[in-house]
Image 1 (tube, rainbow, N blue to C red):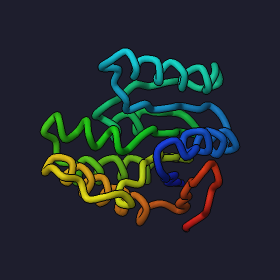
Image 2 (cartoon, rainbow, N blue to C red; image 1 turned 180 degrees about the vertical axis):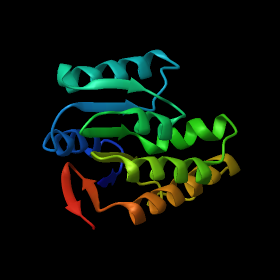
Image 3 (cartoon, helix red, strand yellow; image 1 turned 30 degrees about the vertical axis):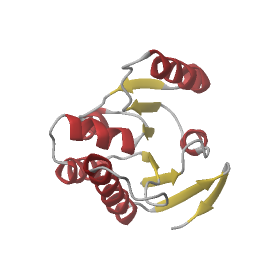
Image 4 (cartoon, helix red, strand yellow; image 1 turned 45 degrees about the vertical axis):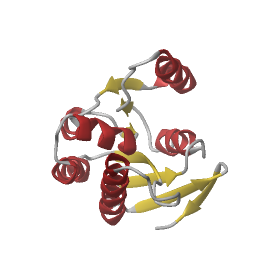
Length: 165
């Protein structure tokens, strides 16, 4: 089963995804796409890891989500987050649409529940530079691709979940 959890920054997406996946059983795997390039990001990663506690196995995978999903024996898998993954793919010169299709294929073949976390990127202003517009467009297209494949789609606003699908 594929579940998409989206919303704005600091809307409660990750917490909701973890709670959702925890209800789906054990073992649990958290696939983190973030990379710790600076002190502030290292602090964020450490805080997220502490929030999850020791009931989750963490896999750090900034690029190869399809392989990480396929290799996971877990009943519950949380991928956090797709928008960071898009950024990682862009900077690595990888095709986001192709990688998205590979990841979704792996997720659809997985016997457990795959909960994907993403940021909603289309509600703000149009970015002023080409790279930011390209990122917004690719992230928005991936979000639509995942939502179409998902059995459930949740939108978080102010910590409140709203089921869209």
